[in-house]
Length: 344
Image 1 (cartoon, rainbow, N blue to C red):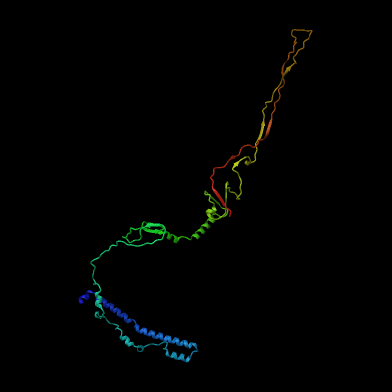
Image 2: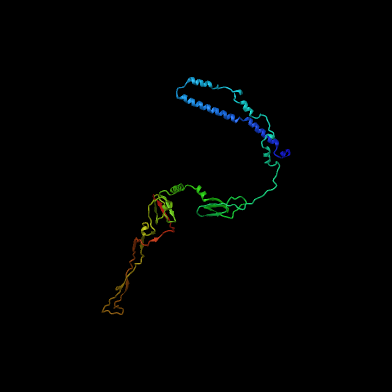
């Protein structure tokens, strides 16, 4: 009924759409007609191609060529409507340029409308379905790894199962992997190129003639991986205008001192003065035998006398002392290290 139709989609809208479709069809060429013309052109081109090939196999026939050219249309020519084959029949099969469709003319319109919803309908009931669980399988190869919960789940979805991920380097949080060992491997520098660069840098730092010191006894050719090295033992480094010269000793003895002497000039005091005593007979008186008197000194009357004092003198002593003494250790405070110099 009309009431039922009014409840369906807008009639004017449908009519407008049909009119638009019809106008588009009018502007399009008839497919069957175009296909037919295409076939005619293709056949004619093939015939000309075959004919031309035969002509080119021998000498050109100017008369035949002229005849062919006479069959061709002029370069600048026009076709009149009357020259189009079956034009009227084709036009009769087309709809009028300005025409309309009525509802009755639309095939199966009512059946189509019955399958559509009303224009102003609503849904009165919605139902939410809860997802109890999502099951999945993650396969892995052998090797250790770190367990973590599945990352990037939509909000509200969780898992009570841990998933094992191999060689995880950094976790963004307890549920999400930031990057793994594979990420680092993909971005790593070439190992050989890196080792070559390292060796070149060390070669620059330790050229031939350089000194390598360490608290470790491992030789520099083992640590650095290159060069021939000679160890320096029991020597202090002395900065001079030459190299590899040695000298000096750990202790100082007389032979290590500069050439020198000690001069001595000694004089004794005047302690040599002295004198000698003797019996002096000069006062002895002689008595006469015939003239005896009381005061005659008959006996020898002598006394001690002394010589004149002499003998003061000095003694001079001069010369050099003999070098004496013992060697003494003059080593300053030190700390030992291992040292080598590179000679190749």
